[in-house]
Image 1 (cartoon, rainbow, N blue to C red):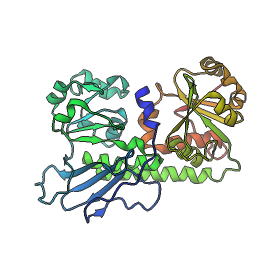
Image 2 (cartoon, rainbow, N blue to C red; image 1 turned 135 degrees about the vertical axis):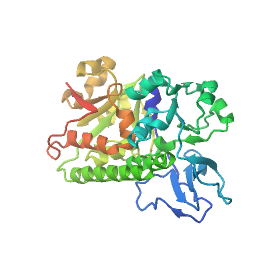
Image 3 (spheres, rainbow, N blue to C red; image 1 turned 60 degrees about the horizontal axis):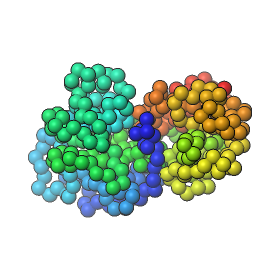
Image 4 (cartoon, one colour; image 1 turned 90 degrees about the horizontal axis):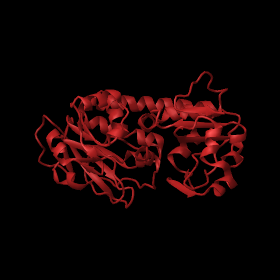
Length: 367
C-alpha cells in the first residue's frame, strides 16, 4: 500500500522544454489543465515524446516512437528509439496494467514486479500460469527473468535521483512514467494518449481521454451551481505526521471542482505538507467534511482507535467522515486516469441535492 500511496505525493513541476524539431504538436496546450510534463510531436515517420524533469527542470527523457513495420528514418532526433506497438512490456505498476487492459492492450504486459500490489485477478492468473513473468522486487528485479521474457520496453515510475539498477545495462527502452507527478487531474489523465501510442491504441486512448474530460467537465459545471461550498479536510495523522495536500495539489483541485472549500486552498504547494495534529486542528477543526484513505476503518470508533484526538474534529462529531479503503477499492488503479470518478463521488457527497441517486464506489460513510 505504501508503494501506491506515493502516487499522490506530487511535487512542483515545470513546463516541458520545446523539443528541437519543427514538427507539429499533437497536443496544442489550449488550456491549463493539460499535462505539464508531457509533450508529443509528430515528425516525419516518427513521434517525438518529451518528458520534462519535474525536479531539476529541463528534460527527463526523450522517446522517438517509430512504427515497428517501418524503416528507421535517417533524420531521427536525439532520444531513445522505441518500436511501436510495444508487444512485450515489463510493467512496474498496476495503475498502468489497468489502463492497458482498458485500452485493449493487456496482452502487451509480459512481466510485472511487486506482484503483491496487483489486484487484477485475470492478470494474476496469467502470472500463476507462467504466461506473465513475475520478475521479483521493483527495487531489485530478477535480471535473469527480465532477460528471459525479452521485453521491448520497461514501464516504471521515476523518482528523484532514482537508480534503476542492472536493468539499465540490458539495452531495453525504459519508459519513465512520470504521470503521477502531474498535479492537475486531467493533466495526468492525458498521459493515456502516450501509453496509447506505445501500444498501438492511439485512437482508443484519444477517445477515452475525451470521454473523461467531458465527464469531468459535466460534473464540475453542475457542482458550480451549489448554493454553498462546505469546508473540507483530508487524510489523517499517521505516526505523528498529517500529510495535508497542498493548495495547488491534485486532491485540492478535485475538491475545488467538486464544489468544496478546501481549507488549504491558499497554500501554493502542489505536493503535501507535513503537519502535526494540532496544526491541522487549528485550521480544520470546524471542517464540514472529512475524507480520508486508509484500511480497516469502518466506524468512528475505529477512527478514534487509530488516534484518540480524532474525536475532536467537528466532522467526527457530526458524522460527516468518509473513508476510502485502499485495499478493497480500486482507487489507485482507477482514479489516476479517471479523475471524473473521484470528482463525482466528492460532488455527490457534498451536494446530494445536485447529484441524486449517485452511489459512491470508493468512499463510504462511517458512523
